[in-house]
Length: 79
Image (tube, rainbow, N blue to C red; front, top):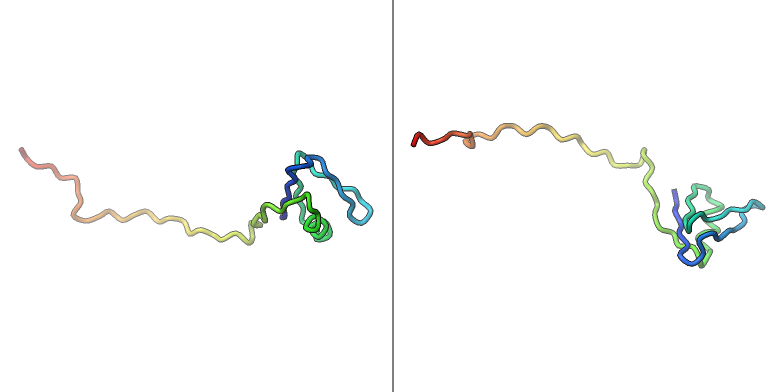
């Protein structure tokens, strides 16, 4: 997903294939290639983030429980 921001115009709008699209609060997000092409050409819109889709996210291996360390037991001296 492509995300765009417009710091200067919070409600800026544009046309794509005859349909009107508009920023809300200075932010616009889309997956549509035609909209992305127009937004990349706009001088008042800045591409901010390409969010990672869940299927593209790198899976992090779950942590395994640490094995108890040898020699570091909680023994107290008999004083």
